[in-house]
Image (cartoon, helix red, strand yellow):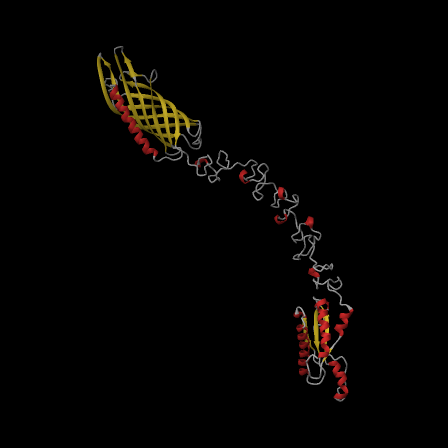
Length: 482
C-alpha cells in the first residue's frame, strides 16, 4: 500500500510542477507565490462526523498565481491520513494525496489595499484525491485504493509582512465523489474539512525600470535617474520639501525655488541669495541680482551716473563715454574726438591763425575756374588747419561777377568751388566728405559794381567778386549751408 501511495504522490507532484511552470511563464511583478503549510483534516461520513471534535495532521505545498487585484489562481497538493474508530470493532484509516485547482476571491477594493497587511479571501475549485484505505467493517477487513473527484470551497486570511514574505490560514470544505473511504457504501459520499496554515514566499523580481528599489507599480516617479536616493514612493528625496529633489538642489537643507535650483531667493528676482550681490533688492540675473534703474548695464550700487538716458553707451562706472575727455559726453559732443567746451557742444574753438586763414579768399581770372598757383600755398595751409580740427566741416563757397547770364555765372561759381575741393583732396585732406561746396553765382558780391560804367573801369571790383570763400565750423554751430 505504501509503495503505491508514494508512486501516486510522485505522479501528482510532477503534474503540479508542470502546471506551475506553465503558469510561471506568464510571470510579472512578484505575481508568483509558493506556500508550504501544515494541515489538519476532519472526516464526515457513514461513521459519523469529526468536524468539531478531532482531526488528523498532514501538510502540503501550493503554487499561487496573481491574476488581478481581485483574483488569484492556486494549485495545491496536500497529504493527509484521516482515520476513525466506530462502535469499538469498526474502524478505517487511509492515506490520501489531494490536488486542487482553486480560484481565490480577494477582499481588496475601496477598503483594503493590495499591499495591506490583512488580506481575507474566499476560495473555490475542483480537483482530485488519491486514497489508499483500509479498515474493518462488521469485523470484516477491507483494503482499497482509488481516485475520486473533489469539489472544494472555503475561506482564508493572509498576513503580509514584506513584499515577499507572508503567512496564511485557510479552511476548506471538501466534497468527494466517492463513498469508499470508510468501507461502507450506504449513505452520502464522504466529506472532509481541511485546515491549513503556513508560510508563503513571492517569487520573481518586480519590474523596476529606474532601478531605484521601488517596483514600478508603486513608483510615483518611475524615471528617477540611476543612483538617486528615493523615498518609499520611489521619488527622489527632498529634505527641505521645496519641490526640488536633493540631487538637483544646491541648497538641500533650505527651502528655495526651482528657478534658483532649490536655493532661497528672498527678493524673488530669480537669483539665489547665495549668488545675489543685492539679496534684499530685486535685480537682474546679468548683474548678479542687483537693480539697474537706468538700464545701462551697470548696477545701481556701482553707477556714478544713475540717470543716464536710455541707449547711451557708458563706461564701467555707469557714466556716458567721453572719448576726448573734455567733460562733454560723446552722446552730446558734436566733436567727440576733439576736446572742446560745453558752450561749443564739445568742439574746440578755432585759433586765431585758423580764423585768419579761413577769412582769406581764392581769386579767379575772368571767366575761369582754374585754381591759380598763387593761391595753392593758402590752400595747403587750410589742409593743415583741417588736420587740427578733424570734426569740423569746411564750406567752400564759389562766386562770380555779373558779366554773363545768371545761369552761366551760377555754373561757373559751382565749378570754382569744386576745383578748390579737388585740390584740397589731392593734398591729403582726411574724410573728404566734410568738404562741402556751394555755388552762389553773382548773387553775393563783396563790393557793389556800377554796371553802367565801362568794363575796364569796373575790372578791380569785379576781380574782387570772382572768388572762393570759406567757413569752418560744424552744422550744429550754425554753419551757413544755404
